[in-house]
Length: 110
Length: 110
View 1 (cartoon, each protein chain N blue to C red):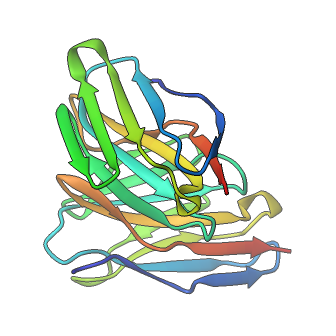
View 2 (cartoon, each protein chain N blue to C red):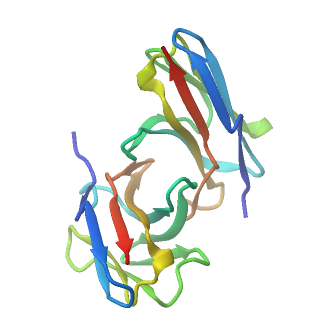
């Protein structure tokens, strides 16, 4: 099955700093999403981005499907950005099984 | 905005008991999923459901687990005889293009 890796595993940022999180996947995908899991455990949709680039406020994401990676950019980080960021992919041939990466744990300190 | 709902938010049960976790997916979505997340670990795929039947299941989803869509709106996960290691957060999701997650049910098996 498809393998999903994320880097870095942990990240500590000073408030106001920028960061780039990476997601690599081992096979062609149908669907790629980025989620933020907040400290209360909720999974919040950030981006649905099987290819291309999207922006939403201070966050943006780029997926290069042919090279099997996606990047999540966080600019001017705030303490509320803390939590775990997951990417999740569905294999190209199917929507049936969606695999999550191990996540990047982000702590933004004042 | 439509959302996925889950009940209960927290369930405590004794080892060996049966539990049923309930989900109401977004009404025009076609694919439904259950995931679990053991505390501090990544989100693990359990099962996907499409066209009123299981379309894919993981190795975690053994004979102790079952899913049902008893009516047009609810989607349930049943664990027949709970074990201590079933303690986790269980997330339901529905998808039409992108996945939307419910807030989760925290299951504690004592």
